[in-house]
Figure 1 (cartoon, rainbow, N blue to C red):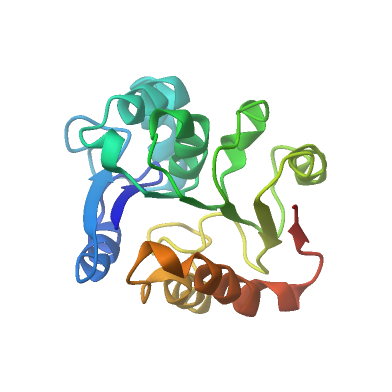
Figure 2 (cartoon, one colour):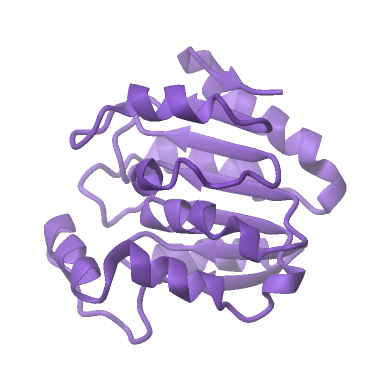
Length: 207
């Protein structure tokens, strides 16, 4: 498969590149971040967020994704936080897209009218401090082909640089997709997400 992986606001960190490397065993992987140049080393999530806004925020990130090389061949998009929201907003730029995956894409709340063109697995954080996550979920369920889950961890739990990092949460997330080998395994992907996240209650799967 051809996979595009969009980082969070920390950019292409060592842990992000490690994830990309894990998936290159079976896939053609393209990595993208919000930044054209290597960002400075961030001392906190707040520093990363202010830098993200300084270089153009979500508008800049979506624009970068809309012009990514190899978009016509991209079959799977995978994004974290702002990266998850950016690939969601840009999904119509990928005519071959068969699967979308996003983890805690809080900024998705600004793109709820986006036309959904393929099945999505979306894992939200336990809660979000800056907006009502229930409102977002209640709007998303109007779409088809969505599997919506809520993890028992806070926003950023996959990234070791996040103040909310959780080692178990990262391991569970990687296990959901790191063993996929072909595009005909969409059903297996859905089963993996269900195995790790349905047990926490209130999953929503739309037809």
